[in-house]
Length: 128
Image 1: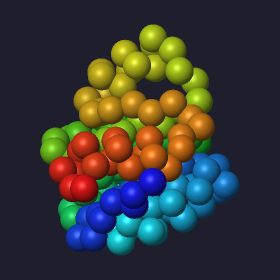
Image 2 (image 1 turned 60 degrees about the horizontal axis):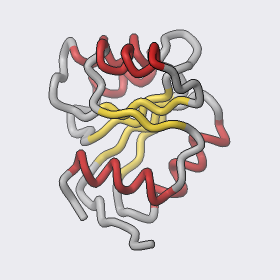
Image 3 (image 1 turned 180 degrees about the vertical axis):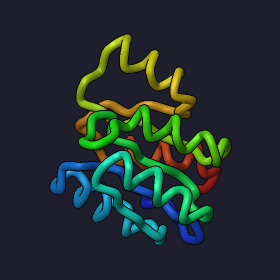
Image 4 (image 1 turned 135 degrees about the vertical axis):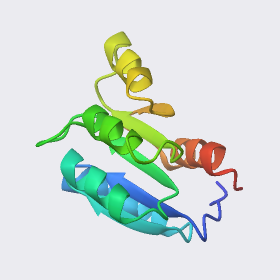
């Protein structure tokens, strides 16, 4: 598997479960991207507002304080262009519909392998 070069990109990981956040961080550190981490939806929305350089958001759907869909809706109030990729273990028609309703760009079902993660991020960042 070829590791893509995301140098110059900033990726926000919004994930409340520490092992999942660490897995994503370790996987993405190899790409050269700057990684920011939020532990809930409120933090994710705040970080997105504070860091306009964020290139892409990996958003867990189910988090405390504010779920990923509501956080994405809040982000869309001030940033309509950053790609938001929903990550969830609860794949359903309702979750996919909510992804679209929240104006998120894509959807990945957990567990997520590195290759699948790289393909989706590359698709939205336009890098290889």
